[in-house]
Amino acid sequence: MVRPDPRGRLPAPASKESSLTLERGLALLQAVADAESEAPSISELAAAIGASRAAVYRLLVPLQSRGLVRREGSKVRLGLGVLRLASNVLPQLRLAAQPALRTLAETVGATSHLTVADGSEAQAVAVVEPSWTAYHVAYRVGSRHPVHRGAAGKAIGLSPEGRQWVNSTGELQPGAFGVAAPVRGVPGLRASVGVVALEKLDGDVVGPHVVRAAQEVADALR
Image (cartoon, rainbow, N blue to C red; front, side, top):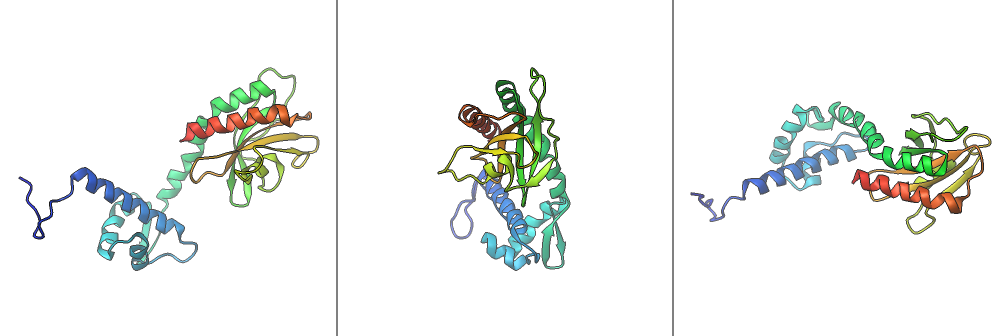
């Protein structure tokens, strides 16, 4: 029989308690990650997630055991376990984006790509070349360029109320033409899907295909 506590309250169901603990643990990890330079203290973390210092100490135990955080006295920093998790993100992005990128490349007849913002740079994380063209752009996975240059970078910063896609000509490589659209609706992800070719692309024709592919990538990631 479940007995009430001294105040007459019944204990919360185990599933609800587990859910609350998980939520607080994630909130704690986010609070540590959000610290820009100085590592937050236990007291600062307690205030950030609305919990007691004792609760923070308890929540840190499983995070520490998995290497997601590390203690330096009363200070808490992200651990190397976060890097191990992050290293698995790009392969999953590539896998999720491949079907949409393949369809886009074959439909347009141009090299398609998924580009992700990394600070002030844009990085190509997935590339698909068309199978039927006589020639096409060879675009290397891992290529980086300033996020404010090229269709892929500029598309990442497009306002939801503005244009759906953006064109560029020769901004990253002389004679190359690009069309790209932002990937929207995926929390924490700043990315775009685009195509690049060695001949001029008609934005009015190619743009809708790129927008559709970007939406398909977003759907695959949600």
